[in-house]
Length: 420
Image (cartoon, rainbow, N blue to C red; front, side, top):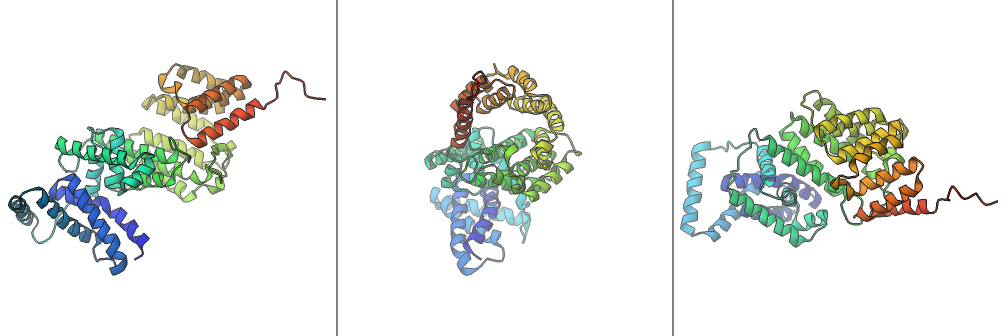
C-alpha cells in the first residue's frame, strides 16, 4: 500500500473510528486526540508493514488504548480502571463474544449531527465538521477557510467544549428534521465556499468542494431515501461538473455563457441528473431539489443559446414560494430577463434595491449593470459595475468587474460621430 492510498483510506475511516470511541467512552475531545494518534501510527506503519486484515478494527483498538491512557492521566488510576472495567463488563453482558454494534454509518451520522449542534455558530459547525467528519487537520481547515490555524483551533476547542457542556448524548437522532436541515446547510455552505471563494486570489477551491461532496455522499449513503439529501448531492455534482471550465489558465473568471462545455464533467452530470430524477417523484419537494433541477437544465443544454430559460424561470418561481430570499429573487430576475428582455429583469430588480441584504451584494449590482447595458444605458451600467467592485472580496471577481468597467469606459460615446 502506498502512502497516498493509506491517506485516502484513513480519511474515509476517520469518522467511523472517532464515532466508535465517542459512543463507547464519551469525551469527544480526548477521543479525537486518541483517533489522531491512531491515524498517525497507521500512516507510519501501514505503508511499511502492509494493510491489516480489518483496518477499522486496528484503528479502534489502537485509539482505544491511547484513550484509556489519556483518561488515566486525567483521573486517579483506581477510579479510571474501575470505570473501564465496569464498562467492559457491561459491554460483555450486552454483546457476548461478538460486538453487536450499530452500523459504522450510524456513527458518522451522529458525528455530523453533533458537529452541527444548535449551540454552535455556523463557523464552528463548519470547522468541526471538517475536522471530525472530514478528517482535515487544523492547518488544512485554515487554508480552506482562509483563516489562521490558531483561529480554527480556537473554534474547534470552543465547539467541543460547547458540546460537552450541552450534555448531548451520543445517539442516533430520531425524527429531528430541524437538525438534519442544519447538517444540510453546513454541507451546502462548505460546498459554496469551494465553488465560489468568498475572498482570496482563487475563484474556486476544488479540494473544498470535493470534500463537501464526499461528506454529502456519506450522508446520502446513510439516508438514501431522503429526497433533500439526494437533492443536495445532485446539486453539488451538477454545479461542480462545470468547475474545470469556470476559470482560464490564469485563474480568471469565465461566465457560464462563454465556457467550453466540452470540459464539463459528463459523468458527474449524469449522476446528478439520475439522483434528482429519482428524488423529485418521492417528495416532498424542497429547495435543494429545485436548485438541482435548475442546475440540471443548465447542464443539459449543449450551448448557452439552447438553455431552456422558460423552465428555469418557472423552477425559480416555485423556489420563491419555498424560499422567499433575495438571492432566489435575483436569480429569478435573471431568468425572466433571458425570456422577456433586460427591462423585464430590471423591473424585478427594483423590488430588491431597498433590501438591505442586497445593497451590499456584489452580484446584485453586477447583474443590474449587465441588464442596464443590455437595455441601452451604458452610463448607468458603468456606475453599477463600479458599485459592484466595491463589494467584491475575491481577487478574480474584482478582476472580472474591472474588465467590464474598462470596457465601458473605452466604449465610444454614441453622441460623438465616428472619425472620418
